[in-house]
Image 1 (cartoon, rainbow, N blue to C red):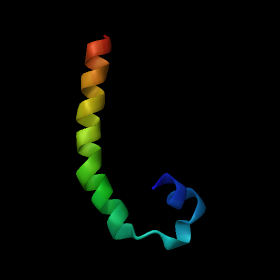
Image 2 (tube, rainbow, N blue to C red; image 1 turned 180 degrees about the horizontal axis):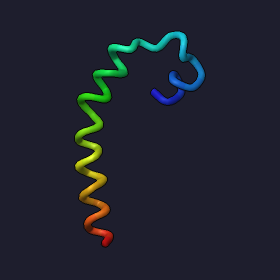
Image 3 (tube, rainbow, N blue to C red; image 1 turned 60 degrees about the vertical axis):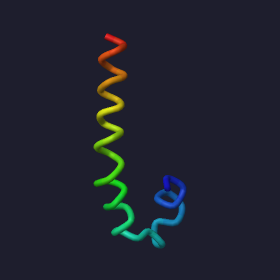
Amino acid sequence: MRDKLVHEYWAIDEKVVWKVIQNNLPQLKRILISIIEKLQ
């Protein structure tokens, strides 16, 4: 997805990007918080 955002931004489907934000970022946030807590 990064490649598309950087190099083919004119072909980006905003609905797909929004779905990724809604569906994947909350899980990623939980994982990152867990990792940070383990490192402290």
